Image (cartoon, rainbow, N blue to C red):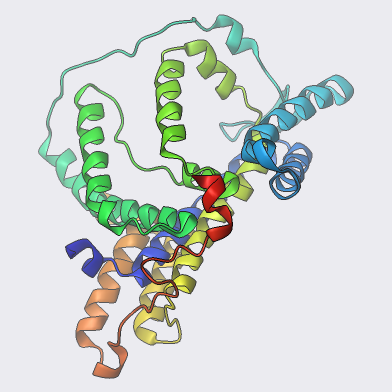
Length: 333
């Protein structure tokens, strides 16, 4: 209940939107320029597959888009030769679109190197503000999944945040990175409309197994940048628009300055990757800063706003027992 009070739909919708649109520069500035024509063809094929295909094939449309992009990159290499463009590191080089040299060199089985945890007060202080943003991000993701599936998942939000924190503790304790709920996966859910928990249990199991296979990792790493450019412009856009869907379904009034001002500021800060530097070693930017601005801005302004602006922030369009997705219930079950 505390989370719901702190994160009303006007806030969670903004967080989901800035998460998706904050990734736009990655697609536009990192992936797409590596091979714009492959990216364009991959984007068009993926969109066509998502809309036109039916049944099983529509569920794997993203995978089909990757396979199509692989094939186009291989064909372009055979027909046009090497391409002179930026690579993944942002350097302009002459390179093959599809380079599988790393696959042959990779081992079949590999294990990560582990080390005992170490603690630093300065590192803890740097990480703490980000935790606030991640909690809001996680809550936004739960809201986004609830909007997609038509199932109200608010009662699962505490469990989701707890599990995310526990996974981060386990990962970082042995030298791994912090974990989070990935917006890209939510984009895939939105595109494929596969919401089965059994499917994601299986996906998690395969991810662990493939994670112990460096050769598979090399295949993934070899995905041409142009292919990723075509795929991500679709996925990242879907994530951002899920934030708008949260506002629409909850009838958030964006003509109310109490809603409009913090959302407008936070979304622009998040999308534009604005940076606020505190010291030489600590700064906030992008998603973290945008989330904090939306979150604190809304509640500070609400405390000072006149009474007529403090009406309920949302009036759900759907009743608690109505999903609004009746046409897909049988297929999803």
